[in-house]
Amino acid sequence: MKQNPFDRPADPTPANPITIAHPTPLQWPHKGNFESLDMASVRRGYEVYKQVCSACHSMKYRYYRHFSDPEFGFMTEEEAKAEAAEALIDDLSDKGQPIKRPGKLIDRLPSPYPNKIAAEAANIGKYPPDFSTIMLARRPHGFAPRFNTNSNEDYIFSILTGYMDAPAGVKVDDGQAYNPYFPGGVIAMPQQLFDDGIEYKDGTPATQSQQAKDICSFLRWSAEPFHDKRKEWALKGLVLLPLVTVIILYMKKHTWSLIKSQKVKWHTVKGREPPSSQPKST
Ligand code: HEC
Image 1 (cartoon, rainbow, N blue to C red):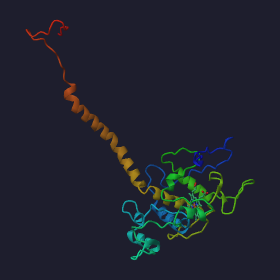
Image 2 (tube, rainbow, N blue to C red):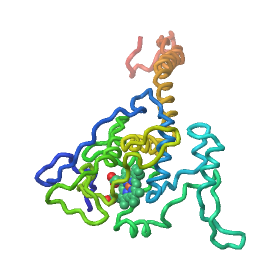
Image 3 (tube, protein in one colour):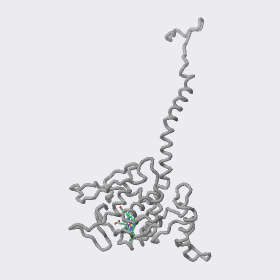
Image 4 (cartoon, rainbow, N blue to C red):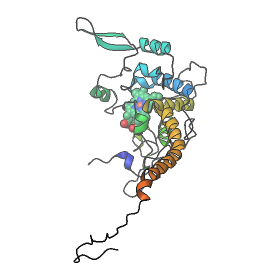
């Protein structure tokens, strides 16, 4: 069976001599059980996705309507409609001919390639993974999945900011790049983020690390749109659970009290004694 590169230990062993750099644990705004997503960062992250990553990575499970969802959206409905209208969506005309039309809220985000084979052909045989839930799918190598540590953000942040010249002895072909955070060290995605590579609408200086942080916030939002609700409900549950436990224990005691406080006692009535073969009860 093919070994999953994510199951390899992070430190070199005789069986696996490749060193993989550990991502630095960062202070994500949404780290911690009481923190919500930083929606301004999610908005900026969408700008990064739209202007940079969407050239290769699809997000086929996200719809424009999610952007303005009353529960977890980060745009107004008008903004989301305008966003959708900018995209060209494949559809069929009244006569059944394939056409492109401006998007609506009910449309998915358009994919850059018609299918996986075309995506691989355009990227030296490597498929740029879909972004809808990638924040749940990638974690630092050799680390067991851990709850609520945000190490997945750390990993993707490190990939995006960790490009460097290949050390001696590592062969990097055309279209590949050296990245010590990627298993194997050679990744088929060249560096994508540069200082001032894009311009943010809200005027935030678009440094490389700012863009990397924002796209990570956006990818967390996309992988877990219910992120804030999840933490809110966990808090409500943890506060209420002790109270509910006490009530349930009391109710159990109450329900059983009649039975538990009964005592059954046998008396022998004179003239109706049990047959003598049985031991006499008192
Ligand atoms: C030129 C096309 C292209 C662009 C633009 C691009 N990527 Fe990629 N990306 C790829 C390819 C190809 C792979 C697969 C790499 C491999 O398997 O070696 C990839 C893989 C990835 C991975 C997965 C790495 C892993 O551990 O498997 C992440 C995360 C990623 N890209 C993030 C981004 C982000 C964020 C952006 C936008 C800032 C972006 N990419 C822009 C082509 C691209």
